[in-house]
Length: 247
Ligand SMILES: *Cc1c(COP(=O)(O)O)cnc(C)c1O
Image (cartoon, rainbow, N blue to C red; front, side, top):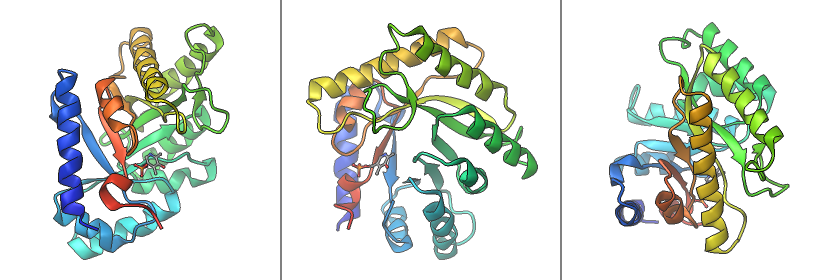
């Protein structure tokens, strides 16, 4: 595994995709997804210049974060992104250990996170940046608020608006925008349409709730990040293109 070379190649592809859409490469944050990889691999990635890391399981983040900090010295300049769906009994772990949360999908989770952030003193001063996860592809297996037919279905829009409104009022949370996952093994045109409709949904949300910021878009993984960037992604979550196949 040559992390440095792989990361350089990813950055080059990010720059090319951004350029082809008339966007600045610096508008795209690459979150290196280290799930299943040990702390050693995170340290090697840090040495290759990576600072944003993503984990999809709370338990793994809670274990890996201090292990990496112990290796790199106190408070390394790492941003840990929690990118996976969260069960309500794990909210304290994410409130304590994550720097950004990409998969908020229920008011109950939002309230529990904010309450914990108030308890641990982070609310107000350093609220947790959160993305609302939306399921725009309509696949039943996908997490996130069902927005598969948001253009026609006022009920779907209303559910998203309600969650967004709750998040905007909670002192522990800082709204960022929307997160989505592309459909599994679909044609590029179908994937592009899901990313485009997610961006349009975020524009709709911004009009509905203009006092909060919903401009960020977390979308795109190893197989589809260039399409996502062309459609406006500000955060791409990339594992295999940097670290190789997970064992
Ligand atoms: C694993 C994972 C990724 C990265 O997937 P790759 O295909 O390895 O790039 C991105 N987002 C989420 C939510 C994940 O769980």
